[in-house]
Amino acid sequence: MIEPTLLEQRRAGLLLHPTSLPGSFLGGDIGPEAFRFIDFLADSGCSVWQMLPLGPTHEDGSPYQCLSVNAGNPLLISLDWLVDHDWLDLSQLEIPRDSAEYRTQCLKLAFQKFSNKNDKAWAKNLKVFTKKQANWLNDFTLFMVLKEVFDDVSWNEWPVALTHRTNKALKEARIKYAEQIAQIEFEQFVFFTQWSELRAYAHERAVKLFGDMPIFVSFDSSDVWACRENFLMDKDGQCEFIAGVPPDAFSDTGQRWGNPLYDWDYLQSTKFDWWVQRFATQLELFDIIRVDHFRGFEASWFIPADEETAIIGEWVKTPGKELLQVLNENFKSLPLVAEDLGVITDEVVELRNQFSLPGMKILQFAFDGDSRNLYLPHHHEKRCVVYTGTHDNDTTLGWYLALDENSKRFLHDYLGVDEEAYLDMPWVLNRMALASVANLAILPMQDILSLDSSHRMNEPSTTEGNWSWSFEWEQLWPSLSTDLNKLIKLYNR
Image (cartoon, rainbow, N blue to C red; front, top):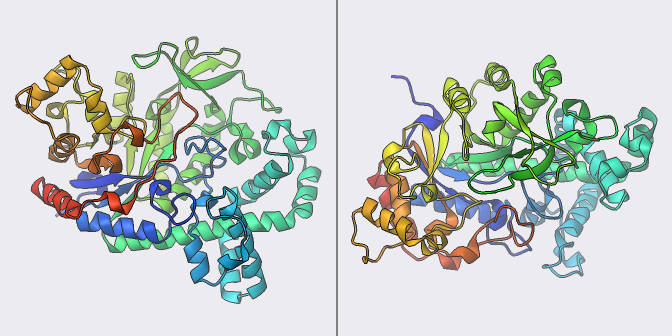
């Protein structure tokens, strides 16, 4: 008997970014609370932990516009782990724990103590790591140092020699800032070491880690600075066109993301080497990867860079088929999920199906009064992932409370309950997701805690107040794990 692949088995999981974990310091991390969350998942019958991208963010905190597609966010490093390894003495810090600089200062102290200890075994591990990850780490570390040196301005505003990456300028900078570079190498080493331990523990408890990969890259990133030949831009970083999506039912002006577009002809000439390396790093971190804006693997919306909205533009074809073929040739297993929300063409569906990739079904999108709506459970298929909502949606309770009367009546009719009957939202939709024929069902943590709109993670098209939500263990009622486990067993997940 052939064992089904990871995405062909009925599973249930929760959506929660590590920053949303409780923490004794400012923001959640991948320390003890992450291990406790894995225990909660396993005890509840959940075998998948889905999260957002793990890269270092800009000041807005968005994990979808990272400073690197490969690096880990050093602010997720567990300080408790550093203390346990005797690399950090918290009594040395005089700044408050809720200070934005607290974690940064802790990491600097940890590197000093690590260096002073001169532990040969750990020093060797660090050297092995830096050598293994050199293809992206060398550029990333210098990029981050220069960002700090030049007051965090974008790389295209640095001195010309560094913007253009002349050999002389790069060599001089690496020598001049060797100590700061070593600090960042240490931070990445610690992040990946901690993550490896977390992933091993998750596997011990039969929990798979489900990551997220934005298809496009932030302009102000080490990837664009160091590898701009992969992108449609001139040597100064000027782009004639930028990425986004055209107007649709959710936006009259479309979405102007501003990311640089790929030079797919060049990438294809290199056998997509940059993409292969990017996926290799992600597969070190995750068991499953969601490709955000999978639509871009079939065609990308080219917006003239001088346009203020995304109204004007055109779809330009992408060699997604060729890319996915190369990826499948390079990796023994490629457990991808296609984020196929929004206006999806037959060509996108064909590409997704050609490589047997599950798409996404969002229950909050289902109840518009049309029984032909493809998000309704009776249209689901096994090869898909069903969600109540995502990180970009309102919480399900908030969504339900804001529904217009027609949509609410349709929902009640679909459930077969009296219009005046009390609906135990969001657990009605939680149960619906778990009952779906979809192989994988994912519930946002806010929805199993029955939280309202004030607890949503992100509101698209806004730049403030996002990405900061976290929960407390006290919000979990005593029987929650048992209640969730009972439903998961009931629906054979």
